Length: 328
Image 1 (cartoon, rainbow, N blue to C red):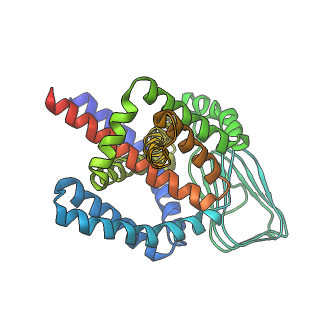
Image 2 (image 1 turned 45 degrees about the vertical axis):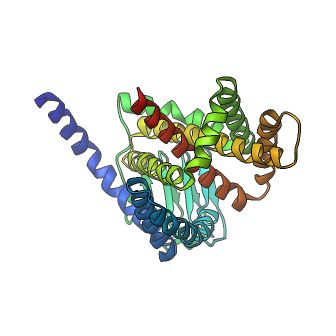
């Protein structure tokens, strides 16, 4: 136990400078989001805790209205902020002219030309920032796990060294592939694969029934599960712990795809029964995947569908598993 505590303290001590810098960057980015989004997120988490803890009829009626209000307060500002985020993955970025938002490079360098005028933050994770003396940045230059040579005002954290450097360098090709990958196709294939797995194992109909039986409680459980996973993943990334952060993000993506597969199967099967289509279980699964693919042409709709449908399905998985263990 003493050795475990010592190793934990050593890890926290070594990661603290990077974690502190990452927290400052996160604070600067959050400051650019409307305060209404923060109110909506707090309301969402509080109501999710209440509904998961005491799912009485009165609480669920209040929870339904609170969930709708939190979505209205949270989703539009977050989508607008994401549109201005200027995130690039696995590629170098050369900035010319006026940029209304942020410039963020994950696994790449940022070159600020002499005519660059950035209204937000300039951030690299595992990359360098090379800034021309004539370039102007309203926010701050941040090189997390990288360098900003010649910029005395930049916030820099120590890049990895030794074994950590070799581990981090191995992610450069992966980040480059992620940056150029067709995310829409990957997500549809991943969701379809998880739906096929649930369908083949016979779990899909059971999960669909459970989701309809307790819709608000499953949604609340899914929201809490995503919050417990995404929050630490962002913290690990900002602290420079790339390996566990990437694993946590990959697990979160897999979990969202699995949850979404449950939700789209349930919705597609309900539509197939209503339309009196043959083989409603199979046809419903196909209809659900088609709906996911079509929604990707409208990014706001795809974002809402992935978050709400994913959280709803994740909660269904958790509730079904806990009830199954309780019966054993």
